[in-house]
Image 1 (cartoon, rainbow, N blue to C red):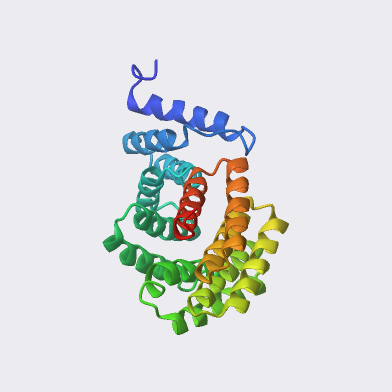
Image 2: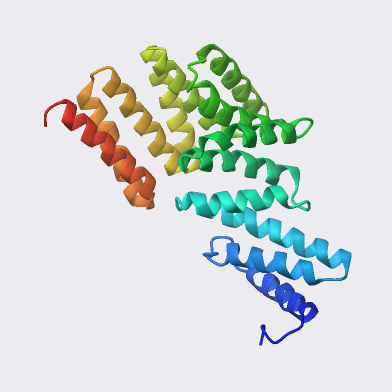
Length: 274
């Protein structure tokens, strides 16, 4: 029936479909979000009414945001990147959504090995957060540190920027960004061979993630702690941290984390001839 409808009637069917699906509980699986966003874009092109075209573009932006985050959580990096690229092109998407798309797009490019694209996406994010919500800058800082400063071993600038991110997140009472920034600071401290400070950062980060019920963050904190222990040849503690991270990621179904921790355990066992 959909295929037999003229473009204008199709757009009305889209509007009904969106109204029904958006009424579902927030935790309801939204496997069709990406496809529906595409339908919204197609329908918008056929609408002669500018106001309705804008409404469809707004719907596309909402569904792309939702699909992008779910794709990232499910380790579907290519889909997440495509969502991010389309969000950046959507003029009806708000600044926060486009900023998130630019930052996540940079992360996805790095995960997919498309490193030359990372700086441009981060520059786009930096342009978007100027004069906007400071928490956007706090999150951009973490991506910039991870993608640009750490590979260059520019640790002084990294620490200064992370401290700025921490201050912004604390002022905004944004505990998730604070937890992430604290973990990033731990990564820098570990690279500087400042073991005590790194351990403190990882412990604080893990505690914040636990308070938030963010088990993926807890797993990442434990895994980073394991990496630091292995670097300092504290192999028993490294194995314990890796196994705890592995247990958490198996419980929450984080396949990326499972593979990473198994790989880290394999490296540890090879180095200790086990």
